[in-house]
Image (cartoon, rainbow, N blue to C red; front, side, top):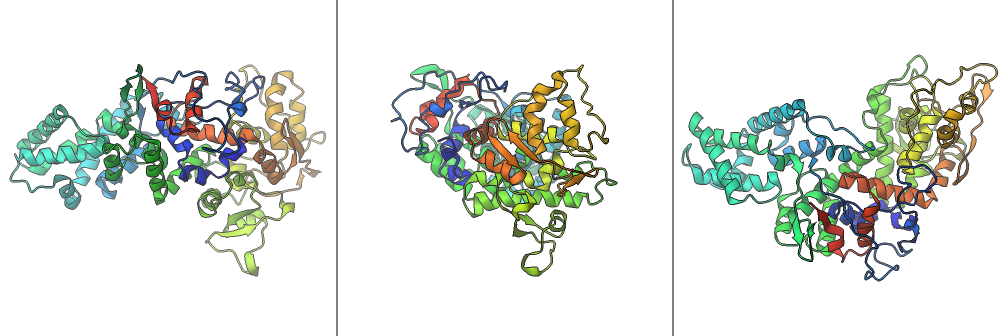
Length: 566
């Protein structure tokens, strides 16, 4: 079953998971199970993913014997991908230290198809972005040169004077290998030594040459981009194999949000990343690092659209409890639930949809109407508490972060909440409304006092009904929660009706029941895999990605997983 393939996200990743090997090693590979008549963005993909022998045994159990080739092998073109803002900052930190990282201001990320990584592979740099990278490189280099211990570690020698070319060369080779995530060739070494020598001669200072060299390295495309050239497949030269260094780069930015370590690059040099077993071992080691938790948290902040929640505008006349501090507590609640399921309990990842407990503090506990544990009082510390069934809360859909994020400034929005579920959890595309269609819903009044009743009137417009019928019923079931997630039974003196149905999935009432309906769907599991793929690879999957889906289940088929085109 597709759901079994996602039994536990952490377990999936820790095994490395064909997913990590898949997303790290390939430019594309997934076949969706969307209904070809659903109008989703992936409707043109094969609807037979459920028949790809994914097998109830999971990654390497059951299914085919791995000897049957995929029906089509047409991998997507490779693309340069600019480092995400957090990748850039983390890389500067790991190369040059916290003080250097504190000085950099890389351009903001631009999402495309819901993911920063896809935007990073799609948009060209503006003049302003280039200026920002130059300013950041110079600032980081100036700060780094003050850390004499770190610089000495790259040198491995004591300079005899400003013109010590051999010592400059030692720095260029050592620092350049880590900054570019591969060894430099002799011509590259010569050019960068010349940069160092010229600056040192001009200022009469050996370390001025080092500083200028650092700034130059940090402005190079080989630092700013994930560069994938690969090696030609001897059996089919039009295809490329990712090199060990390119594999190390993909894996490290995917799993740790930072540049590969010296140890990982050494493993690449030794050929340890040329096999599926070596990739799995390296990934397992990376996932044991604390940075893996931070990287996963960043990913969910992006997927769930809760980054910057503290800057979300709300009408405090309507919601007097709203504040940046409350918003940050809401985001922390979501992060703690994911951490508990994935890292602490290594449980079924899909529990994030209907978990009957959450984490609250002195801000969230009273907001949700929950009693303090053990008869005490809530404090600033977050505590794990059960959620009574009558609250209708459960999982991320009953948490304030998502309920507030997908609502208007002074009211709820069943449409926004339903759109989120369709797009982020089911990987279905909802088109924007036509320009000539009014999006204004009828005003509240005696005939339609609740948001549900007003939207149901809106659905009588045939120009609006097609899309709204896909979204609004999902949000109707969440209408007991106001625009910041406070439970309510009445709206404008009328009882709120939250009995609803997600077409094709089942009936529900409230966040916990909606989560349970979604949790049981293989489409949700496959969408989670698709989202991770898009984030890890920086591309939207296509039908040509069949090859990697097949090969990901048989990691011994590394050639299929690593196939690339120029």
